[in-house]
Length: 341
Figure 1 (cartoon, one colour):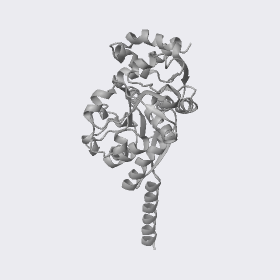
Figure 2 (figure 1 turned 90 degrees about the vertical axis):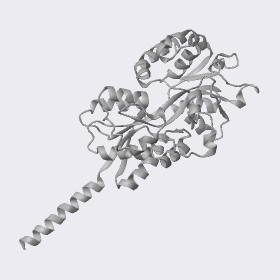
Figure 3 (figure 1 turned 180 degrees about the horizontal axis):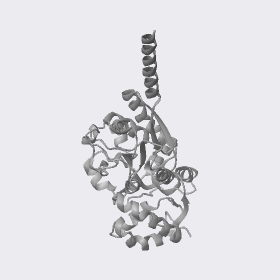
Figure 4 (figure 1 turned 45 degrees about the vertical axis):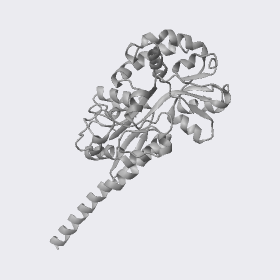
């Protein structure tokens, strides 16, 4: 009888252990809305391969960084989706695990821009570039250079983001013959632009509303948001200036101290799978990071979608993450005081 109860007890413990494993989830920190929806593409395939469910916790870029600092010794997530420059800040505070690239087998097929160092990896890219409502501008109006934002046709019709002014600051520096590192050379241009700015926007939603209503028919805008408006029937034209568009890269990193390191690395590997890359880019209208991602032909033709080395070298303005991360507070302070007052 004792032996029977012993066997039954062992079976019960084994069943409980299996059930607990099945209930365990990989927790991913990400933005809400369509960003979370897009990451669901990765999560679905990850669960299919591993049997582990994915739970998303959402919030703003810097809000999530602040929470991660507070919870450093007991992270609330296993994987973080963020921008590459903010990913640098996670690294600087010791919040990311070093990636084991040998276990991320899809790493070998990535484009150069995806390599963001040892602690994060690019998943897809997009651009911030000038866009305009063709139906609300003169018939022959075009944007072929960042310089065109200073034209009389744009004066009083332009909106810019205030939460991250890096794009117009970097573009102004490039126009003045500099780079992000010596951004001050572009200050005279920015000061000349100020009277022509009609509005500053604080979020993706406000950005889209300003263009949708026509309140500001010209805007420096996230390409993904512009394509969302186009899909909804708003006649938006996306321009890639001859100087290039300012590239943004969303990355994945692994929380330092996660107890699910192997699964976290597999989540990243799934995100970099060429087929998942194709699905992500079709969803977001963005550029893939894997060379073998076969995105749809119509998507590949769109402005700001980079699929060749030539496009990356001639149409993209890429700023090192460290420079952008360290200078952003300075840029925001200067922009608030000198452009928004």
